[in-house]
Amino acid sequence: MQGSLSARTQSAMADVLNGRRRGPMAVLVFAGPAVVASVAYMDPGNYATNIQAGAGYGYTLLWVVLFANLIAMLFQALSAKLGIVTGKNLAELCRLHLPRPLVWVMWAISEVAAMATDLAEFLGGAIGLSLLTGMPLLWGMGITAIVTYAILAFEGLGFRPIELIIGALVGVIGLCYLVEVVIAPIDWGSAAQGLMTPQLADAGALIIAVGIIGATVMPHAIYLHSGLTQHRATIHSDAERGRVVHFSNIEVIAALTVAGMVNMAMVMMAASAFHSGHSDVAEIETAYHTLTPLLGAAAAGVFLVSLIASGISSSVVGTMAGQMVMQGFLQIRIPLWLRRAVTMVPAFVVVMMGVNATDALVMSQVALSIALPVPMLALVYFIGRREVMREFVSHRLTRTVAILAACVILLLDAVLLASTFGLPVPGI
Image 1 (cartoon, one colour):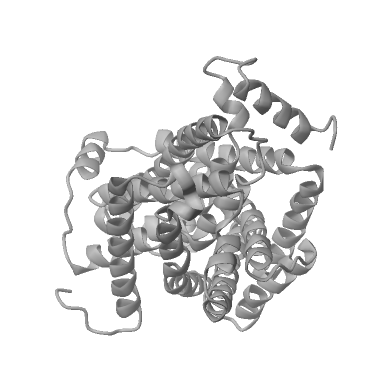
Image 2 (cartoon, rainbow, N blue to C red; image 1 turned 90 degrees about the vertical axis):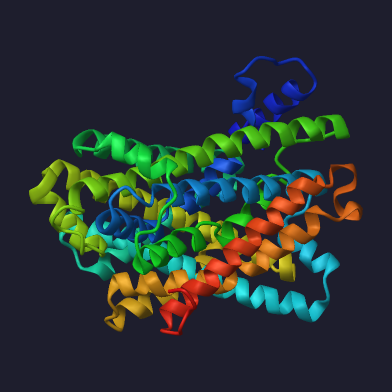
């Protein structure tokens, strides 16, 4: 890899750590892992939930998006720190420190989560292509698969090309929603009030809020972030390790701030376009067809471009996470094309069975909610163990906040699952 883009990036990181390169731009050398992980917070699964929130309740649930994003920042920062400090990813640490039967169960649950993730991502990209070009949904899935394979081929060139490609796709998503909020007549006063004033109008708002929060911290993103940071920089001392953790925290805040703003823009666009007169809009296809007469073909087209970019980028990231999970838990590495095939087969089966695409997205989010406790609780466990983190063990306050956040997420996941399966929930 000598002379490659990745090698030059590692050389630049070494220059920053030994003091030969300084200044505020030095942090950009370390940027990449959080940008890649942030895709999980802008995947097609978020689109339907955010559209429902804005269409049904206007700007009043923006505070939920903010709250969810803050929790995401905490867990992604801790995951990145785990990889930097230990040199191992979360799945590897589970294999090394937890009982073997538990490791097998955790791996099995994580594989189900990987398939559920792929289902949402493939469907999102395919829906966007289908609506934009008029092609059948299965053709859209096939094209999404081919593009995903093509991007994954760059992984053989090192970590940097993939980071730049994913970063470009994230930029496309962000630019699309910047255009959307310019086109849509946003009520900025109401948006500011919804962002700063926690309120839930009724039981339906609570269910949507649960969906937003419960699906925010994604299982594969927690696994992946710890792996993206574990071997990226060559670290010679704990002082350097501390600096890398510092740079990582800055990147997590920046990348997930962008992801949070994109999600808020989704809600605001839906609130502006649909809340008055079309509050029943709940599906991506309906949102697209409704946008055209309300805001024009440009707004609808930009919406689809962002959805396609989201589906492709999150599909790539999901495959990378699945490979990392399998290798970490089982010490087995299979070719990426086979990894891609294993996890995307259920998506093709679902579509060929004629299942409604939005219903399939909902089912995938339920599966992710079931799988979420595995990496979340494992991460909280390891960041507090001194024999794992040494002097970088997380502060008691940080651990307390993480435990409380995990409890909130798990409780809301339980509410989401109960409501999905029609079970009674006290107070709802």
